[in-house]
Image (tube, rainbow, N blue to C red; front, side, top):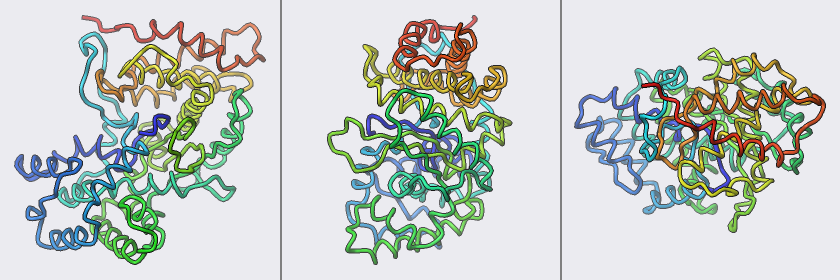
Length: 411
């Protein structure tokens, strides 16, 4: 990834998470599931002979229009921009001992598994193989921008609170934040017309700008295929935008010219509401992502002797703490700590048990503990009007971290 990119799930990102668990359950048999899973691996070929005749004809048509090296181009872009480096995805593998920690499934993960129920398994996996579920992420990352006309939420219901919070966050933290844009991500809009989708297609598959007709032709096919499956809602299914992420190119030797930003997807806002966390949870997610920008500006990402999963976990737990401190501080959102921590289970909900994965973000208990500690720092301060400098807050966090991550299993 861009080493400074952290995010939640988006469609293709969610594909790593949800397709890994939900889709095989929809497969006709184990042979089909194994074949499609293998075909979805980076750099592999997709065996269209296993598809239904109608879908095979469409798949062959799409593949014929793609550049010969489209997979390599897509994989390179995915790696360069961190498309699948997400805190919401189910990450695998382990180095720490899972038996030392309490970890369990969550309502949010259960919710993710319902989003594609009843859909055509073969069609979904073909779209996943192509990277189509990633398209709203590319659109928001490359073509989104902060604007007074932006709306947040399917029905614009989060626009005022997130816009207001964004301004408050920039005033609260002692970093250079004027250039941070807060951008919405809407799934259906990306697939609303070939003209809207074509620039994303060109970007993902390395189609030269001068060959716009090829990008338009592919965009038309993608839109057609997506609309074959009603469950996908023309791209409005929350699965496409189940994502929130922070991005910067600070320190990148090969920047793409993308501004610092936080992207808030409709899907993650819908998910939080669906699992009963629609109160302060959206603000908690935005505050967490802004916490990453504090880390970027203060050069806190690599300022550690930790490596691998433990290093990633430190970064995410620190962002949880930065976010909660802002939410509960009298000069931040000034929210009641109990209310925040109750709703901030949004952070608890995305804790994972993938102890050895480089993407390990902390168990649910660890993330909730980090948030609780940060709330106590704000609430117990002798001078309630004083905002700790971000580096001082980090110093306190680093001292607390061993306690936050200590084994908590009860045998």
